[in-house]
Amino acid sequence: MVARFMKIELENHGFGNGDASFQAAGGVEGVANLVARFYSVMDTSPEAAHIRSMHPADLVEAADKLALFLCGWLGGPQLFGPKYGSISIPGVHRHLVIHEEERDAWLFCMNRALEGIAYTDEFKAYLMRALAVPAERVRVTARD
Image (tube, rainbow, N blue to C red):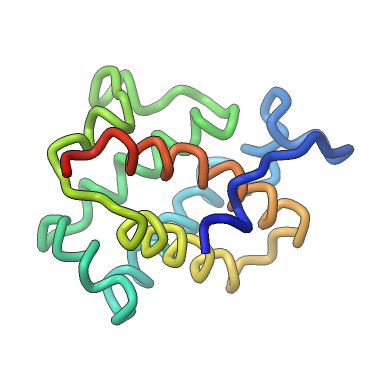
């Protein structure tokens, strides 16, 4: 599944420049909605049961961290650092066993979460390609 998301190409829509991606995601509220949908998919989909078990029972803090991180990652305000400190996404996940299956399950959850959001198809495709990069970095640096 990840192969179709791995190649990031230059496109004319401006995503990845300045805060264009953050704005396309709907700002803080849009990112929070995406993250809520993401964790709902993870919480209810059999395809994600394995990665759901890697998370605490209460997903409130995980959702907050992901939403704040994504705001900055998408070119919006840097909200994660002031609340939680600096972060290295691969480093935070290094203690976990993450192979292709787990990486793909995470991307599945994000892709499914995007299905119900009124983002443009171009932004959805861009976002999945862009998110595949850190997802793969996490897989490469995770404990085996």
